[in-house]
Image (cartoon, rainbow, N blue to C red; front, side, top):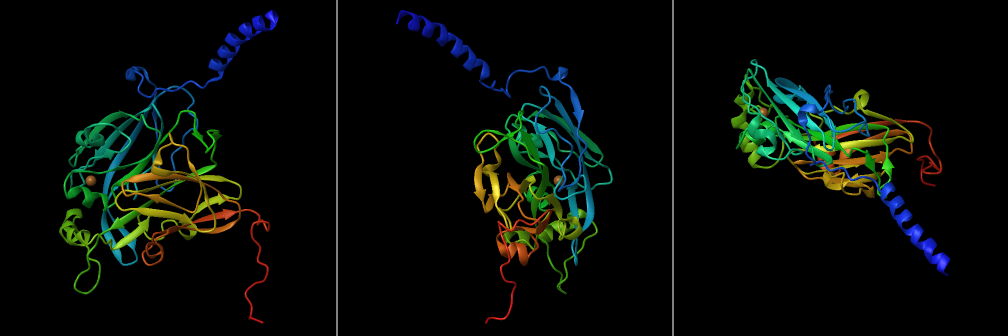
Length: 367
Ligand SMILES: [Cu+2]
C-alpha cells in the first residue's frame, strides 16, 4: 500500500510535466515585438481567382509581408454591351488576394499613378485602428503611401477603397475591393481541431455594378471615371444592381477561364462580397467545411450546401471534389446566377465513381 502511494506521488509530477510539455504553445499575436528586427518578404500579387505563393504553415516567426497595390482606373468591358470605367487595385476586380499569417505585419504601399484622376485609399477589415488604414492612405494622383499593420486575427477579410461619404460605395461598386487571408501560424484545422492541408485555393468575389442606360436603352459610356458617378447614384438608390458578376466581368470564371481541380483534391475557396449579401453554392457537391463569418479561430461547420457571405465580408469554404465534371459555381439566388451572370465553373478531372452516382437509364420515351 505504502509502495503504491509512493509510486503515485512519483508519477503525478511526471505526468503533469509530460502534459504541460505536449500541450501546444499558444501563440500571442499581440506579444511585443521589435518590428525593425523582423525579416521582410515581398509578396508578388497575382490576379484572382489565383493566389500568390504562400506557405500553409508558417516556417518561422512573424515577418513583414510587403505588398504593393497600384490603383488603375481603366476601361473594362464587363458585359457584351457594357464598358465601364473600372476603379481597381492592380487592374483586376476584385483586387488581388493577399496572404499572411497571424502575427505577421503587412506593409502595404498604395500607389496612385499621376495618370489617374481621383484620390483613393484602402480600408483593411483585417487591420485595427485608423479606419482600417483608410485614414493613413489617402493618395492623390501622383502620390503613394505606405502603412504597416499587424494581422492579429486569423481569417479572411475584405479590403476596399473608402474615400468617404458617397465616394465609398461609388469606388467599391466600380471595382475597388479585394480580400486578405490571414492563416493561423500552424495552418488550418478541421472541425475536430486536427491539422488540415488543402491542395489548391481560389478567390471568388461577387461584384455589383449600378449603371444607367441612355435614352436608346444602351448602357452609357463616359470620357472620365467620375463622369458616370451622378448617373450611378439614382440606380444605387434602388438598391438594385444593373449587373452582378463573379470576378468583375461576365464569364470571368467560365469556359477556358474556369477554375480547375482533380478528383480527391481539397480546394479552399475564399469568397467575398464587399457590398451586397451573397450566397454561394457549387452545384453537385457540398462544402465539407465552412468558416462561417470568416474567422479561422472558430471551428468550421460541416457539410454545407450553401454558405452566406454578408456584404462587407469574406468566408472560406473547403470542398473535396469526389466526381469529375463541370460544377457550376453560383450565387444561389438563382436570379443572380442566371438572369444576371453571378456564375462561374469548376472543371474537375478524374475518374467517375459509380458508387456515388450512376445513370441507371438515360432519358428515353416513357413506356
Ligand atoms: Cu478609390
